Image (cartoon, rainbow, N blue to C red; front, side):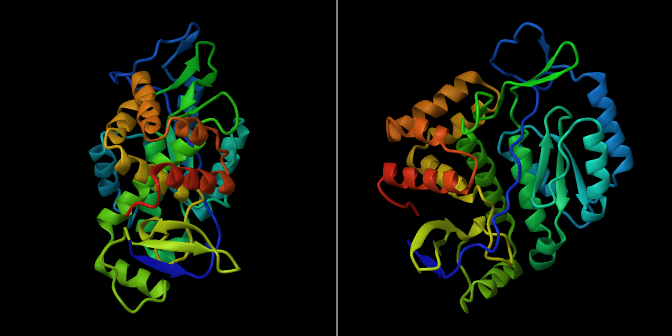
Length: 326
């Protein structure tokens, strides 16, 4: 395995927010509708989504959104609605959301947030990272959010409320229940999008950022992330880094773990896609991970949604498969 040593940690961990959405009409999903629940979006949520669309400008100019959409569909996933907003619109969007009891836009997060009640992804055009790395730094976060939004396990209450059964692999049973798997799935796809669509100029920019005179022959080349003492903490392929920076998303270690698991057991990836709309697919994912190590699925499922949890899960995976896979 080739390695490029990075002497410092990422500048600042940034992450997108976990998301999900209700099943769409005509979409297959193998779970029974609980009593008192429906997949039909209540009118109040439809009106709020229309208001956001009406009052917040969609800033997708300069982004290759058709390419992003084609990529998501090519993975066998359905496509959610999305809004791309700029920093100037952050306060207005937050005001609209909080006035209706929703969480505000998190200006500390690069990627965005998905509002499952509204079946809408919001993607922020983070100026700092777009300036240094170009549109692909925004597009990769679109992929991350839209990957989450492919989950079909959200429901509405017949009285007009909302109930999310699960967010893909993460359930509503408490903190740390499946977040590693769900975030890893979304981040793995974001990295793959970068790998497939990065330009020669982008590769040169990455080489310059990382202090290398040589061009990289593959964004699958692995970098070592070290602490202040020079000790290797974990490894990541270059495709997980934000272009033009030494930063990566907080969940990138989970993405790399999921990628290695799919290489170790080729049956896992088809099961992952099936699991977005099928309860049997969820069971297949658990079985396929446990074929690698009988206790691995529960270990990964229990990790918390934080930096430590994602890194611990990556190390659990490396231990289970017997080393780092190239």
